[in-house]
Length: 323
Image (cartoon, rainbow, N blue to C red):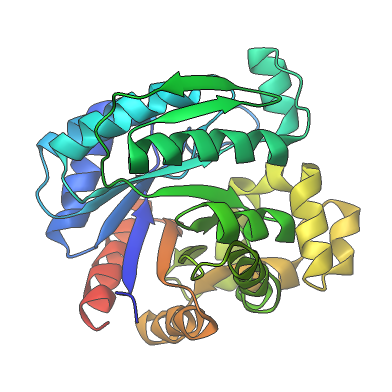
């Protein structure tokens, strides 16, 4: 069985603050950190940041913690540009870097970058095949619908390439053509009943073992569910306006997702709350479903959010040591 890991998503736009948080996670015994393209989004907060640059800096001030992108967007950069980045990270953090890629969501991509968000899964398939070919074999000669790429003089490097996945087809692609899937806002039962079987089916078609699933979950060690729910609703509000997430929750058995608003039942399927013992049981359940790793979004709650955040991080470090 692959090593079980506990990782955390590191939010924030201040680079020094993010680096401090990464070092803190390492000191607490948390095994991995993941950086998204931006930070928590609210109606008046649309943070964007260059996560590859931040992780390169993190590689120089950490020693053991795994570093990953979850995710960086594919549309703004040619796949060979990420190959060059991975080659550098393989030297800065040998064996510690994982590249998580994804197409993002239609409205931000078209509004911000001006691309036509056409056939995102086919686009992602081409992207991943180019990147993995060069990283594994040192060469690629690819002429597809979205990309052309040709190089023959690269040195292969050991950097896993993972993709974001929400709907079953993206999990199937992960099983067939990548080194793993990164879920986002998916209930545990959905991962067990839909995501992991789709990954296994994709891997079987490709004639290879199924790669690992990194399961995203929100955690808040807090006894007042109403306060936890209020924070979760604000943090994840925008996702109920995005078709892939509405469809995913419908497939997961939440018919109320069609109303495009979070229900309490939906949030309870995603957010782990309560005390340390209850949270530990919920996280172990995700592993029992078949997740290889857990990526936690920490939800600070209550009158002292910083104490809430630190309590959750301490718990995650202690929990990681029990695996």
